[in-house]
Image (cartoon, rainbow, N blue to C red):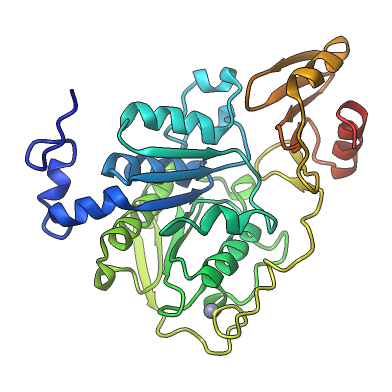
Length: 345
Ligand SMILES: [Zn+2]
């Protein structure tokens, strides 16, 4: 039986921490949080928030676990490499074993302008645990539009950065960085690598900010752009002041990233020899039927969440909404042609 009283229950040590207290603990248990990205940062953040008792966690990730993830993505183990579950689902199962008292909503989707608002509009706050700027600027637009606070975080090498955005109260991402870096300008995990302790530090700071937002400890929030380097042992906080009235996003309320045309059909995936192929509008693919069609052409397996098809040097992972990850190539044209040949456009 699970003991729930404040003095001896699961959250006892957290509830006697004065700044949380029994009332803060209740607020955590009523809180609804969306974690975008269930990779390095996301697995740490989701683990901390699930253990802290956040009542509703939505986990959003488009990918499947890979061997190179295990060095820093704490909710996965070697058995997840063979299970063929999306990261969001594998993480949700692990978290359910850690805390069966909370609700977890796993979404194995690509976050883009067609679905981002639906993913965030019913939560109290959003934690950014993505690895790319395209999604962060989209999140910023969506969160400012709906007045939802969000915590930005990024890690590369031994270096990390975080800021907390409360729309209308503090500068938004575009107040500080008006435009995303040009493709190829920012280092990626691919080119610069990343170490676990840097991930853990930034994830811990993001989790603490999420907890403060959930309990209403607004005075304790990070009011600056906080950066750190675990190798150099440096820690810096640049104060950010007030929102910029001329900011296109939170000042003029022009949501350029949200209002863009449908996303491109192919995206190279960071750190992977793989390309994602999207279909608009989302399809409804019968995975069992597709598996039957593909079985004479290669090795195929499927479950409720995805189908995996191997042929020659390529592996296609197909999701029920028609989205696919084509492994074995970084060439979008080749990925599209494999998709057309085996799944059909
Ligand atoms: Zn702004």
